Length: 315
Image 1 (cartoon, helix red, strand yellow):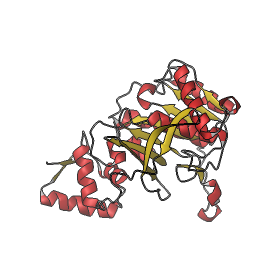
Image 2 (cartoon, rainbow, N blue to C red):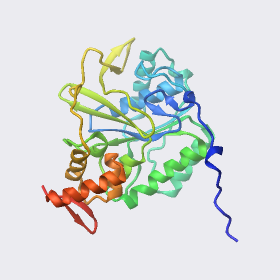
Image 3 (cartoon, rainbow, N blue to C red):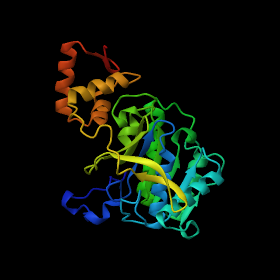
Image 4 (cartoon, one colour):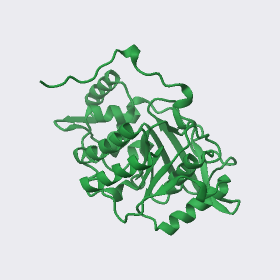
């Protein structure tokens, strides 16, 4: 006889105190999985390393966001030589007033880790089980597989595996991922590949460079986000790290409110393939009833076409 799924009454579900909802307050949720995204050369790795050092050392991330759950960190930097990783970590530690040798910050030194290979998934699972990290950092996603990032059916199992690590070992997962060059879409929609990547994240951090300006935008599934911040690489205390640029206001400091119609049209314009109602709902964060009414009107207006595969912009 097949065993039934475990079930509990809603009022019996665990409450989580406010203090336990954050790993890094306002920036990354407790046990959150998510993306640090941006175009190439937008300091994504610098930001991921800053989060890693802060969690391992209990120091405020970017010297502003308090760490509520310090502890071990496991890091895999697939694109950078190990000596470069060490130099960057030492620089961030110097800026934060920490000593790298005293931090429980573990670096995977394997030349290749493939999340699409069961052998490597098992090895990573064993490392997480042995070290019990509060945070797992994987940088970047493109070096961790050989699947087609545009195919949801190929990307979803990799993300499901990382979600399994979070649930089984109670660890947050930070995945660095590239955005498409020159995209004018909202931050999450600009991520390269399937919309599954944007929808997967509980906490997402997006970096966008416009000229000399570097803007950090924060997004949470279940919490309000802080306003966009201006960042810059700075030298302080003998080390180089990202810092909040207090003297510079974001280019979009006073943006106009983008309505549901504009968000849907932007998502469709930026898509490489038809988008389903579910994909549009997750990308645009719009209620299903509102989205369905809007899509019907867009079809009537002739700016969107519905096909068997989903919706496509006509422009």
